[in-house]
Structure formats: structure tokens, C-alpha cells
Length: 165
Image (cartoon, rainbow, N blue to C red; front, side):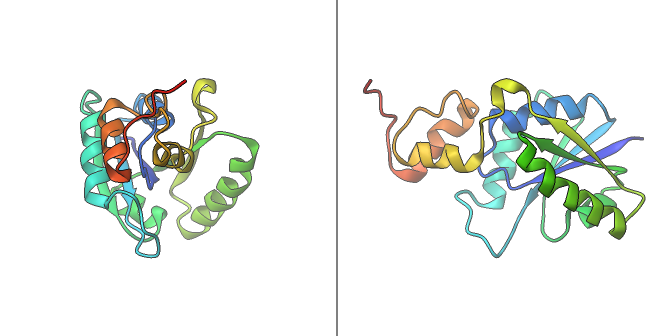
């Protein structure tokens, strides 16, 4: 059985993340989306909330499972029985960091390979940080995140979408 792990913070999950999830799920028998719980950071949504949101927006993909984890992605992949770690690339700047991580993971566990998927062009500009900033100012995030995330974002910031042109 081919198992892959797609780790990330997903704070919040964007259409770019979902693009990578859908495409990588077609490559493997099971895709485990790992929601990182990093105690050194203060996310907008708790790990439990992010897991719940991801479960909701991936419910139509039968071979996707959502789990939270802390620690090293490569160790989480080992615990899941995965042979692959999936990473999305938006731009060349992502590649430098991701290549270093893939090489480090390979040293830590040479049995787990990293698969890089370039984000579809229509989502290449998206980042969770940009989406959060846009939502904080009441900007329209509906083209960036699934409907299940839109209201949660505005609610978290105490904003309504700014419909002024």
C-alpha cells in the first residue's frame, strides 16, 4: 500500500492546499494530511479546529485521512507507515527551503522520499499568511479558501467582508 503524508500548519487551509491534497491523493492509496501542532507558535485556529475544517473540506476524497501531530514530519510519516512526504511548491523561493528539508529528512530516514508538487498556477499566489491578513481587514477571501473557512476567518477577526468597491 502506498501511503503519503502531507504535513503543514493549514492555518487556514487554502484552495492551494486543497489542490495539492486532491492531486497527491490520486498518486497514493492513502494520503494522511498531518496538521502540525507547534507549541512555539500561536495559530489563528487550534489544531483541533484545523483538523475539523480539513475533515469537512476533504470529505469527498475517500483516501484522505486527517490527523494532528507535533514534532518532526519525517517521524510522523514513519508512524503512519508512509513511504512519501508530499510538499507543495508555489515559487522557486519555496524550493530552496523544501529541498533542504527533504535532504534532512532523507538523512533522518532514507526510506521516506519527498514528492514535490507545484501548485496549480491559479493558486500560486496563495499563502495562509496573506489570507489571514486579508481577512483581518475585511477583504474578500472567498477566492482563496473554501466556504467552510470564510465565515470562520471573519468571525475570528470580528469582521464582516468588505463589499465596498
